[in-house]
Amino acid sequence: MAAANGSGGKGFEVPKVEVRFTKLFINGQFVDAVSGKTFETRDPRTGEVIANIAEGDKADVDLAVKAAREAFDNGPWPRMSGYERGRILYKFADLIDQHVEELAMLDTVDAGKLFLVGKVWDIPGAAHLLRYYAGAADKIHGETLKMAQRMHGYTLKEPVGVVGHIVPWNYPTTMFFFKVSPALAAGCTVVVKPAEQTPLSALFYAHLAREAGVPDGVLNVVPGFGPTAGAAVASHMAVKLVNFATYTNKGEICVAGSRVYVQEGIYDAFVKKAAELAKKSVVGDPFNPRVNQGPQVDKDQYEKVLKYIDIGMREGATLVTGGKPCGDKGYYIEPTIFTDVKDDMSIVQDEIFGPVMALMKFKTVEEVIQKANNTRYGLAAGIVTKNIDIANTVSRSIRAGAIWINCYLAFDPDAPFGGYKMSGFGKDMGMDGLEKYLQTKTVVTPLYNTPWL
Image 1: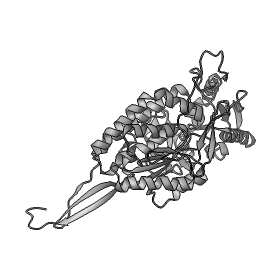
Image 2 (image 1 turned 90 degrees about the horizontal axis):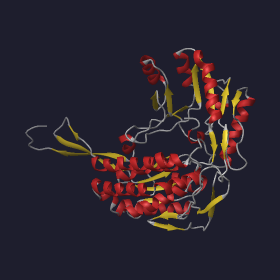
Image 3 (image 1 turned 135 degrees about the vertical axis):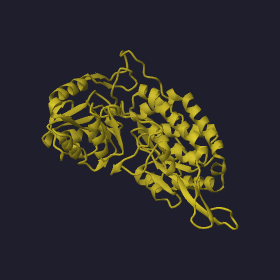
């Protein structure tokens, strides 16, 4: 595979990235942690420190939840009309559009994400999703019930209250808005704990929310570590709800196509073609527009992926290409392909979250359905076929929350996304993503002297 790790003389310039926000965002203000502690966030391209971030813990989460509770119980946000909330969220989205390049730069230096992908996909996609839920904010309503008795009944849809969001590091912007957009549209208030590896864009979004007119206390962002800040969000009694392709995004993607089953008649040709493409893949600085794959998010993830590659070889899989670190600094790994893979191997059963593909052979449709379902995960699957009958059979047989036929990563704001089995519960996006932030109340009154029921 090609490498393009240097920044000088490579036909591109690495932009200077300014980190403007490093403090906790609580009750509409950027503040230091109660403890005064900070932690380092590092650039995965080099391993160097980008900034020191205020380190939230239980005391800070308590303050954030208190602010969110006050904003929900006594503030204007849940009492606004859906139309008014929507107008503010539309303005929030407009401000994101105005800062696309800066936000994409933050996710590149913090998470190693490809800068060009951030500019054209991640950041505009977040604004699109926010507008989707802004438009839904004034369309939340219950139903009139047809009671069997002389009673008038109806349901109300009410926001659940304070919501805690623990955001992962692989898609810092996308996952932030997967969670925050519908919660805000529903009238909830929010406490976000971004991943300690990638706090920078979340803090910038808090700033933009304030600029857009989101009231104090409605959106709070508390960077910190999982065992302290994350655990405090998850266990807080006032928090009513907590949400907890292979080389795309360096393989750090929950729907990575890491288990690939290929029909035996085309298996050898597929392996050859896949290996050729992997060797042509350019690994290097994610600011370089020629680059296809950037670094893993941090040293821990880098070492975890290399460990799984070693386990794959020790368990008997054949390494076709890749498998080694790439470059002289940073957390880069070559695109890696294994063959002669068995279903019970660790590289098949575990989620590696890296650029590692396991290629397996199958003979019949029935066999591949059984093999595909032989996992504790069930988030998404892709089917490539020209036979509509096979497409229908397999899509209905695979136990996964999203099935993409002759396409992959086919996300859309109106398409609910969420998994089966150990791939989580509930849905993000679509109107399903809004429903989980609402609770249904039934209201019944008696009817006297009514001419009809």
